[in-house]
Image (tube, rainbow, N blue to C red):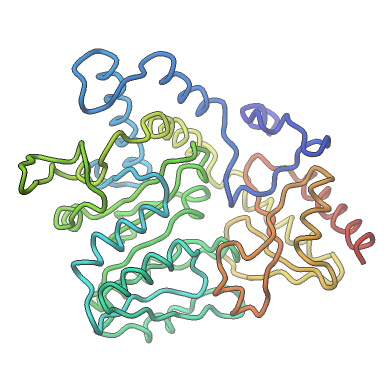
Length: 397
């Protein structure tokens, strides 16, 4: 554990002059030296534009950029042509909603979502439904923070053209049975997209085994840089879709009257891309694969046991299969006050609606606190968190 923690320079810092205890990895993970150095190396040694240059710096940059595409494809069991680089998972979902949705949704069609979706997997579908006349239908989660497979099956009908659902909840931590959802959606004739932002950092994902049509995730939650996201799409679907954004770098021909596009995946990557960030995704994938599930489960079991000892605590979600996220409230203590108190003890947790306002409404709360753990966290940090929460209760109450 100490050797792993040495790879993360942020862990050597202080927070409010106290030793940092970082418990907000579900929002954004910390970054290991290997990733930082990879990005720095691009700027220092082969800073050049990709896909356009015949000089050596440009060739090196292009090779590193495309090798990262290969690495990410390997990470999720996909083909290179099916991997599109975006600036975020949010943009990946917007791309599908606009590029696929605009030409495939119409009046009376339905997009099926759940009440546990992140805003980024709700708003793009709301916008495209307004443009096309389609409607959104929501599947409600159960009291334990799960989506029942039978309820999902019963919710499907001939009007549902797209299902978009989170692989793992950023509030409950629930890992949804998405393989079953994919099979049921396809039997219904529906396409299905998975939001993998919380899943990719914690488990091995094979899009080929899942069979999903689209899969989106972000770099900054999987040890990588900010400003880069990934969209996987089945090649036959990407081939038929129009570009979400247009400009240089995606064209085959341009005349004064019209334009035609290059082949996938590059037709979805206009302009100068996020070169350094994409390149640094490759060592992030390497590091991630060496650490997947090495520590999360035991730490989570320990955290649940310790947190349940706190008087007046309500923990949201009780799924058997879950990522290391604990969302909770404490009777008589507002989550924002708790987060502020812990901040001055060096502990970083998240407070608010976590970009899941429909879920907050379903839970009949306005906000909650969230502690999220990763393999660089320790059992002693869990003990410290519980100790300081108990202190906060005494002070605030």
